[in-house]
Amino acid sequence: MYSLLLAIIYIAFISLGLPDALVGAGWPVMHQDLGVPVAFAGVVTMIIAGGTIISSLGSERITRRYGVGPVTAVSVGMTATALVGFSFSGSFWMLCLWAVPYGLGAGAVDAALNNYVALHYAARHMNWLHSFWGVGASISPFIMGYFLGVGRGWETAYLVVGGIQVAFTFVLIASLSLWGRATPKPEVPEGGSEDEDGSRGQDDAPVLLAHALRIPGVVPILVAFFAYCALESTAILWASTYLVEDRGVAAATAATFASLFLLGITAGRFLAGFFADRIGDKQLLRGGFAVVGLGALLLALPVGTNLLALVGLVVAGLGCAPIYPAIIHSTPANFGHRNSQAIIGIQMAAAYTGSTLAPPLFGLLSTWVGTWTLPLFLLALVALGLLMSERLNRLMAHGAGADRLAARP
Image 1 (tube, rainbow, N blue to C red):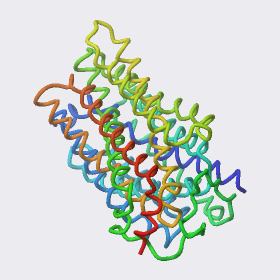
Image 2 (cartoon, rainbow, N blue to C red; image 1 turned 45 degrees about the vertical axis):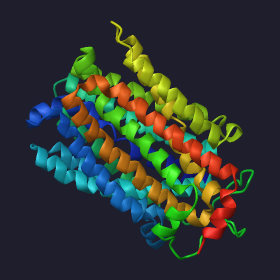
Image 3 (cartoon, rainbow, N blue to C red; image 1 turned 120 degrees about the vertical axis):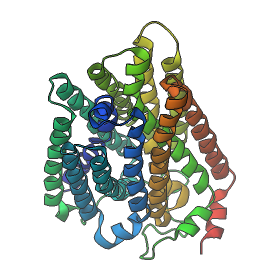
């Protein structure tokens, strides 16, 4: 049953990633069909991310009350309904309407699943599971590119992806009986991921937001997560438009090429799973941000060929690969099991705050200055994420654990 549940979780992570790149891949055509400026892509993603912030902050209470399995099934069902709704949207305001259930569904399942995996599985599984998120996120631009190429339109792509999500929903409903069964205890890394009182379980009282934010190291990792997800969502949304407007690539081709960034994330997480337990989350974070910076530099080089830009997308994706899993997986070790669900929920909110603000902010920047600034925008976010993750490392190295224990109510 343990292996079967793990397979179900892999399916759930595919469903998390499947819709994420659709807006960015199809927007060069969608905004023309809907009669809105190109910068309006940020409005749709802002609404989606706003819903995830709300549901992420409430994820601890929801998950404690209903359980991880039901929350996952209902949330994927909500995103499936929203994607089908997107396919029938003939105006921009309808896209905005369907973005609401999409965001609310995505936030709760993201926090619940990530905490479940962080508590019950080793770092290698966290990376491989997030690699399967990349599988889903990489497939959807190919679906969009295919239907745009054959003249079926972006609406058909949304309908197909929505249908896949419906099938995933039924699989998750059928698996509900597995989630409450015992799974192997999590591996305790050197330094301990147990709660400071030596217990492994979580009591029934939710961790208050104000208390979680007072724990040393929480604010720096929230800012680092904000920066990472800001750069990831901006690259996913605007890479296709950057290739069309600044590199002269055809829209259907750009939708496919933009998936190279996601393919880099997917391949990188699969490879990272083989050595994540040996290297450790700290080094994965540090190296990941550095490689993303290299990819952004390649993307920015003003040369007469698109080859370096495409290589830069892959390199940036490879650098992104270990960052998200490392932040999530290290949360119980850094802050204790009792606090992990609440802090991961807040991390999801910080992540989607980055996803909310960064794409429309870059949309405004591209309107004023031009989409050529995309690599520079990504580099600024890399610097912020690296600075804050190193701040967390210093706090952990100088006895933040003892301060954390003293700060507990």
